[in-house]
Structures are given as C-alpha cells and as structure tokens.
Length: 364
Image 1 (cartoon, one colour):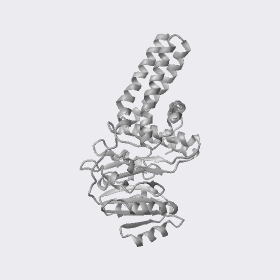
Image 2 (cartoon, one colour; image 1 turned 60 degrees about the vertical axis):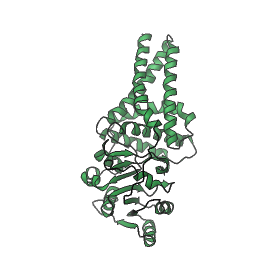
Image 3 (cartoon, helix red, strand yellow; image 1 turned 180 degrees about the horizontal axis):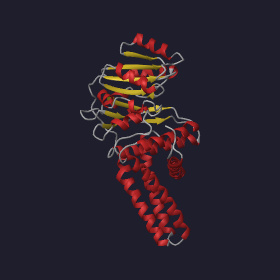
Image 4 (cartoon, helix red, strand yellow; image 1 turned 90 degrees about the vertical axis):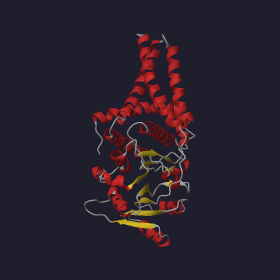
C-alpha cells in the first residue's frame, strides 16, 4: 500500500512537471519582447464614470506620451460628478481630445459596453487602445511599448497590470493570486487560445471589433468587457501579450468583499472559455490538490517518508523559483516569504471554487 501511494505521488509530480517546465518556466523566464516603435496613428479610449479625481492624474500622463500621432477619446458615461466638465475643459486646450458624452437611456442604462461601442465608432483611427480612467500609468513610453506589438498579423495586444501595494496580509494574498493568474495567462495563451480572467488594458485593430459585431454577444453581461471580447476574437495568430515594464499600469487594490465577488464571477467566466484553456486550468488545479492529498496520506504510512519529503520539497522549490520570477515581472518583490503558506491556500481555494461552481452556478 505504501509503495502504491508513492507511485501515485510520483505520477502526480510528473504531471506537475509537465506544467512547470512545459508551460510556466518559459512564461516566467522569457524576457519582455523589445519591438521597434510603430508609426501608426492610434486612438486611446479612456472610459470614465465619476472619475474626475483620477482623471486629474491620468490625463497629464496621457497627453505627454512619447508617441508621434494619437488622439484621446474621453468617454463620460453619465457621470454625476464633475467628470464631464473636466473633460470639456481639457478638450478646449488640446485639439487631439475627442469627447463622447453618453446619456442614460432606457435600453442601455449605465451600460459600459454600450458607452465603449459609441467611443469605438467615434474614434478616427484604425488602431485602438482601451483603458479605464481609474488606472495609473507610470511611463511616458506606455503607448509606444503597447502599440509596438502590432504587426501585419498581430492585431490584438493584451496589456499587463499590477495591484497597488498596501499594508496587511490580504493585500499580499491579492497580489499572490494575481501573479498565479497572470502566470497561467502567459503560459496558456502562447500555445492555446488567448484568454484573460482579469484584463485591465487592451489594444486592437478596429476591424477586429466589427468582425464580431463588437460586444453584441455579451452586451447584457455587465462585467468582463475586455475578457468576453477577447474570448470572441483572440487567436494565437492574431494576439500578442505585452509584458514590457513601461507598459505596465497600476490598479487600485480591491477589498475583501470585491475580491470574493470577483472570484465567483471569474469561475463563471472560466466555464465560458472556449478551446482547451479551461481544461488546462482546471486540470492543473486538480493535479495540485491530488498531489497534496497523496503526500499527506503517504506521510502517514511512515514507510517511505524520506522519499515523500524529497518529492514534496522538490515540487515546492521548483515552483517557488518560477513564481518569484513571475512576481518580479509584476513588481511584487515582497511575496517570497509568503509563498509557502499562500501556495497551499491557493490550491485548496481553487478546488473549493471548482466544487461550488458545480453545485451552485454563479449568476452571470
């Protein structure tokens, strides 16, 4: 019995090695691609709803990008603060600003996807970059680096982001969780259908938007604007992922309640993913869980505890190396010591989410 358990543990470890070395290693250790700047006119669509304070910091950075020709399409989606007044004030000073003021109507009351559709139609350039007003850009080369990934065949670019660093253990867990998700996005999107469960910035050619009739297939789903759009249009051939440090944007860290909602919604989104991506994610989580259970049971036999310990430590060290490299790309250099605890918690949490999704489907 003890020997059989050891064989099972070794088999599960081999499956994990396929993921670690076959998928994650290259995703974590590949250097961000350096591309030549593209001489293409770009429209940057900035979505705002009651974001006047955030826009006061974002607009100066956007207006001073090191890019030869671009316009800012500022979308005000029925704000009740002074967002519209601020946008109009900037538009009077800068000729490359285009204002799209969306007024609530009965059919699309407060619908972000409807507002963005109007912005896409109002933009004058073929290449578009979309970002929300509450994001922070830290480089004047942001637009240059993001659009440098456009080629004749690469017409969609997925950008990366990092969460703001705050005090407390939950913030560290949030950034650990994000690193795990981003590591898998990089790994699977390069050899399978590109996807994202949390996409904060995106660039694409306008024809890609019209090829799938925009957001029409998910217009009534209030969340995951970029994610469902990518599900409809992205392929390995037409999609690039930008990891350049200057293209990273910062997102304010969410609280525990918003995090719980996000997790449940991501499980629903995961079930909607096409191709083999959803299977790879779920199978990886299952294999990790079974590995932990097999290791615990194997330890209880005491017969081959030293071999079991060696396998467990080898798995932990290998994944620790991969994780640290991936976290460094996202500026998360303070998570090294928390990896041991968070790694176990993440495994059990993913299985719990998977089971809860089977017995209680989250609402779309």
